[in-house]
Amino acid sequence: MLKGIEEGLGRKEIARRLRALTYGTREIPGKIELYNRVASASVNRARNWGSLFSLEEAGIGTYIWRAVGDERTCSRCFYLDGMEFSTSKMMSHVRMALKGSPADIEWISPWPTHDLARDDYYIRTPLGREYLRGKPTSWLEDHGVGLPPAHASCRCTTTIVVS
Picture 1: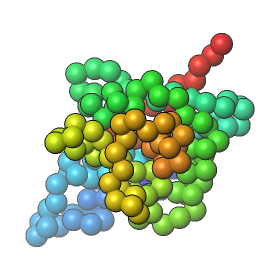
Picture 2: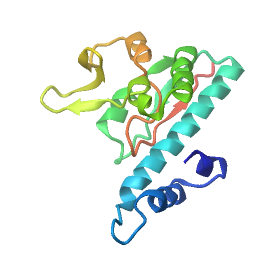
Picture 3: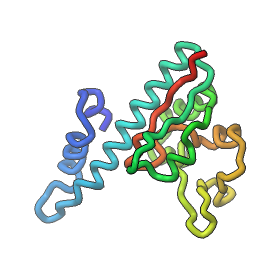
Picture 4: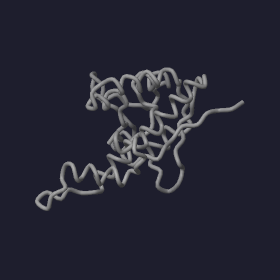
């Protein structure tokens, strides 16, 4: 996947390559939609995390989570829309993710899950489910919530406030 990003390929071509590498036979055809999601999330993550490196280099202390805000935007993204996060705190999570195992990403930058019964989002921590409603931004930052993407088909990005 990283090679595809370095080559400047889009998510669909990266997904095709993933499929060919794993389930590209007639016996096990796989589903291209799943690979598109993996590729889309990876490209989105690379783009957003790359922009954080630029913010850090420019000395920008905070950024704002921005959802697209159209009919395809999910409630999870609307929940995070407009929240302001510390560039340095979130960059510590990016650096942990880049140094760690790919499997660690679930803990370093978790994707919130919606609990329909409570109508609240949660992430899994060593303590179990931790619900997001009412948590201060500092708690979200400490737990890696604040780094787009928030799910496989996420189109969110970050912006800065220019005064």
